[in-house]
Image (cartoon, rainbow, N blue to C red; front, side):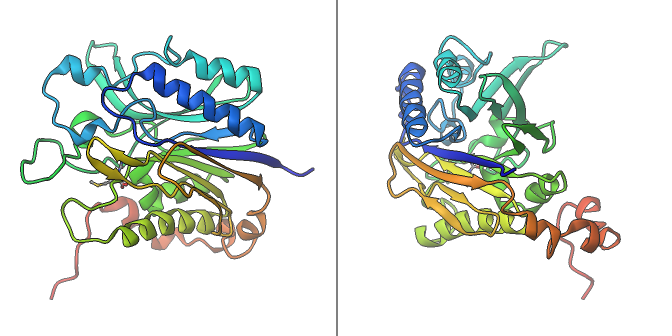
Length: 313
Ligand code: CDT
């Protein structure tokens, strides 16, 4: 029996700081309807899809900072996404900022993604592991990247979920650049890795052309897909947002590493591809047959050491 699922990436154009969550959710439900009309049964939204990318600002007022986070999911504001998901039978991946108080009363903040099935049930959760940027205000930067200050490192690892006819995995933005992200999900026989991203077009601390940055965006996901024989769906929050130009280039990548659908704007845009979840099986059975070819006795440093250490001169 073939395992086909039509998947959409629902790229969001800019979300300004003043835009209400109700307005953003309306944009997102419009795109879910559009994606459904094109046959999609699974829609992938960006990282922090409900708000502007607020880590670009140093926000000292705690109440203002808290306003960018969700304290419940679904909430009254996000319920329309779940209602439409149920009505249309469309699952979705949603990136958002999560805030809760743990059993000791401590405030916890994570950069989170959830997976919702075609019955509108939350079936998976991921909390971002690789938090880029810095923890405190750095005045020399043209804009901030305060993810290390605004979030804790994710505490759920890289789980995968058997749902919607396949094995589904999630990560968020900077995670896509790390081969470890992909391999840990590859080790669980993942079929689709979904991810949302918020990536500035320009590198604020080093000279790097927009062309090169887009190349790094795509090559990371294409390599991760091929080397694990998995589909990958990368969805951007794009365009000029809060005075910072954000990268577009949302894409759907086959297990062969080929981009099969690519966004052409920096605005709200839906791209769609029919994904055969068995397309990567030959890769997982041959060149990347992990069971036959991996050599874990040679990989110890991967988990024993964090930073690179050169041998003595
Ligand atoms: N959101 C996110 O993870 N963005 C990073 C930009 C890093 S610049 C400090 C990325 O890897 O795309």
